[in-house]
Image (cartoon, rainbow over the protein chains, first blue to last red):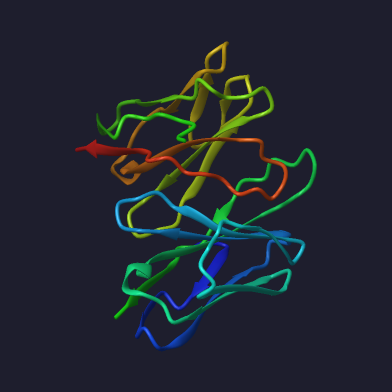
Length: 115
Length: 111
């Protein structure tokens, strides 16, 4: 079990569907992250939220829309995805602040299949 | 560009020390070395980090060379549950910048 909870664990969606991935942490962390991981590849950073504001968008296509409704929750809204977007989507959180070297705490991810 | 270089795979016998090398020759003065591992079907797990001094915790030891251009992660008594992909990452930390993962080393512990 991890302290970062992601739901659902598995998701199959069609290219015309709209779905959302959810991530929750109760460690008081004020930075939250979305990563994408293709099979046999390392995780790739997508988005970073710091104090509930989007601080980094790694040129992610607009069919992926992140949302941070409060300091404990992070969503990733999906619309009009392509089959090549099938991957493991990982959420992480950390403390943030000058001089703070907080490790990232990862959830176990949502395995997404786009058909 | 990759900031770190690791061997793609390594084997180690159960009960022996596993020594995982990492080259980071372009590391800057304010960058830390972080190690994470990813067991199959799980999210990455933080192991240890350091700046220039050697570090030890309950999971592992981190040895950083004096010139900081390379480091070694040591798992003192490897078990089958240590089979995973190990990632060596350099970054400034502190702020919410995220971490950039390289390709990592797939460590296989043999019974």
